[in-house]
Length: 373
Image (cartoon, rainbow, N blue to C red; front, side):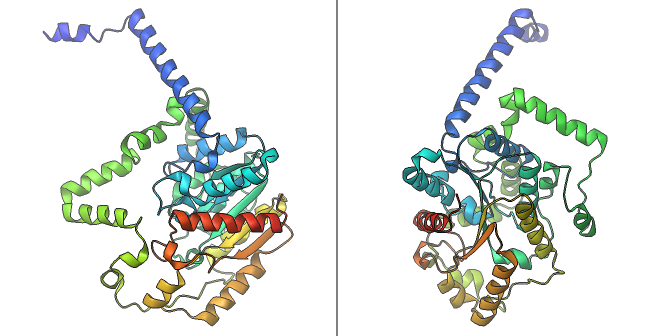
């Protein structure tokens, strides 16, 4: 019986040809799907923080023609408070600019992701530059909370994006190791080359995300949590759903309660590792003469004042310091703290669809005003 069953799985010339043909058809279908998806890349988000997802997006930026704008940033630009990627800031801006300047063939790419702080964005920008990716404009949303982050780097995999760093000495001082062994480099090259010819392999993370809604690792964590701690799993599911709701409809009194934190102070000390990374980003842009807009992320000051309190003088000084550090010939610094009404927030920083649309309109005006063409 077992022998008869195994006969169904015998490797023959016919079965091998059929398998290869099926894989080629699937691969071609995926390539066509991806090509259509990136007709309007502003409406495409990173599937997850895996290295394959980043490399896929970077490859698409490299292949694209026309005027290319790349967004760097965190969950606000990623669009954590909207379900559809077509309702993010990059997506709205791409549609608006395409209508105004149809001859420029504007393509916008969203390389922001949840939890990407200053150090993560340095490694991504460094990779773009070292890969020789032609970018016309960088737009970076600065969430000032990252300057107060204790952890220097949380998403360690971004280090793998490039082997070369102009300011390698500073990375060594910060105890950041990016040199890989020969075996690691060989494995990375094999993965890269296989991915170039086999779309199914390169986009395996994206396919998993489409089928499961998350990466397999995240889904596995969810399943484990349901088994080990079902109450915590339900709590997280509710929090995920609540994220899409307006902030004033939520019970923040029970979630936040009394806090000792006062909003306004930003650590701009030269010894702060986050400031060191921030200046490395600025140096990369200036050294390569890349035009950029840095904007201070919109804040729900009404909610912040109610639950935390705002030291307005400390905030004014902090933003003045950031502007002085940031602004140069190639980089324009903009303060968007109060650019979006509080009703369009889901919490203190995340914007809903209408909030993203309003911010995109403001960016459109400032891009034209500051002649970032």
